[in-house]
Image 1 (cartoon, rainbow, N blue to C red):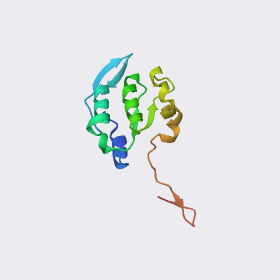
Image 2: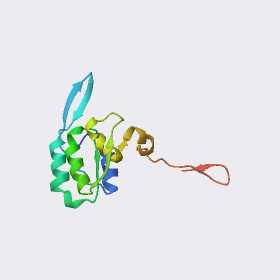
Image 3: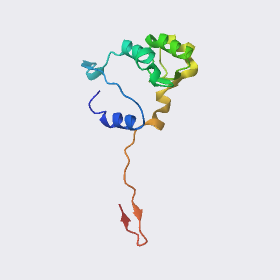
Image 4: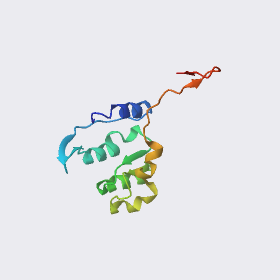
Length: 130
C-alpha cells in the first residue's frame, strides 16, 4: 500500500478487484523518492496456488520476464487474460505471449482516473444551479 493511492484502491475494490497489499521500501534514486515492493515470488505463489481457484482469468501488470513461467502456466490452464506492460519496453522473454500483451501507455488517456465534478445546469432564467 502506497500513501496517496487510497482513492485508486477504493475504486478498484468497489469495481470488484481483490487487492493484496505487501510491504514496500522507500529509497532515493536519481534525486527522486522511489517506492519498491518485492513481490515477484509472492505473485507467482498467489496466482498459481493460493488463490488459483478464486479467479477465472488473471490480468498481470508487469513487463518483467521473471513472470514468464507464471504466464506459461496460466496459458496452459486457460487462466491468462492479459499482460499489461507499463510501456512498449518489456522483457524479450515475453515475446511468446504477444497476443496477451497490452501497453498501458497506449491506454493511459482512456483509463486515467479523473475526479467527478458537479455539472452546472442553467435554469430558464439563465442562472446556473449546482
